[in-house]
Image 1 (cartoon, rainbow, N blue to C red):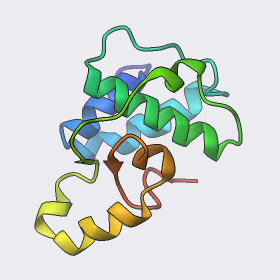
Image 2: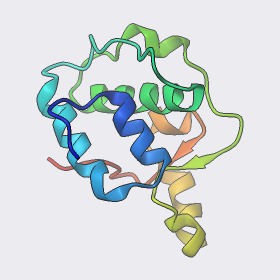
Image 3: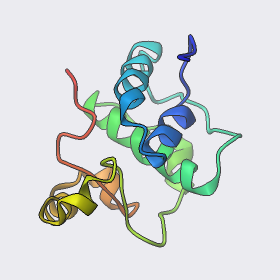
Length: 123
């Protein structure tokens, strides 16, 4: 069931759980809900892994809008182990995994997260 409002944590959880079917909808919801990503509050219901993904996503989205990310993202670290956000395709297609490690957007890479260069682009 899709809620009326989507939180950044909802999107982070969907990505971490490889729930690709809902990721696009959650991304579009966030883009329409927030005219600016700068003031998105820090999630208070997120695990550390969800917080890292949330911070990376907000930095990515803010950069695509040419605006600063929320201030709180600067204090969020990175994951200890690399994590792909591509629905498990890196396991089925290891050559793609290597490509995604190289071309992942910088907000993801700096947090040890990897995806395609076009990750979550839709407009």
